[in-house]
Image 1: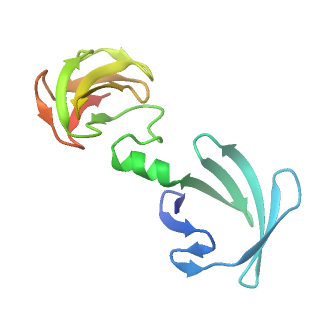
Image 2 (image 1 turned 180 degrees about the horizontal axis):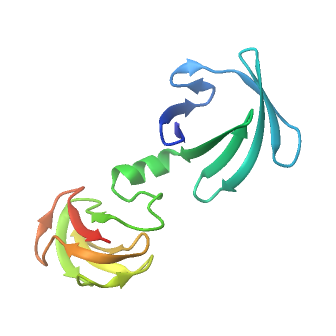
Length: 162
């Protein structure tokens, strides 16, 4: 099942031909490079794709003259969100949460350090494996809320960023 968010206000769950658990039938026809015509429930809609970010699963659409920001989360994105590893957190980071219960083995940054996407932040031992937790985006380390040797639970906020 996919989750579709429109203008950060409306959330729809899409599973095949079901939208929010109800049958949804429509006829969509490409009429140009970025243009589509949609027929649904006796209504006609003209759609223009203004901007598309396939990697980020985001797009901006103009439907009958009104602009909509649309984001799509597939099951993998939803799982990453639940683990505190949101794929949407690509730009600036607000915090680092423990993706699973474990023991902090090493902290590789200090408050005030600037980090870039992919930089190692700390090492978390979980299920007898060492997991290097890396920055999901850029930011400056504001606070480190854990210490080496500390046990953490899943979702625990371990680091904050500016």
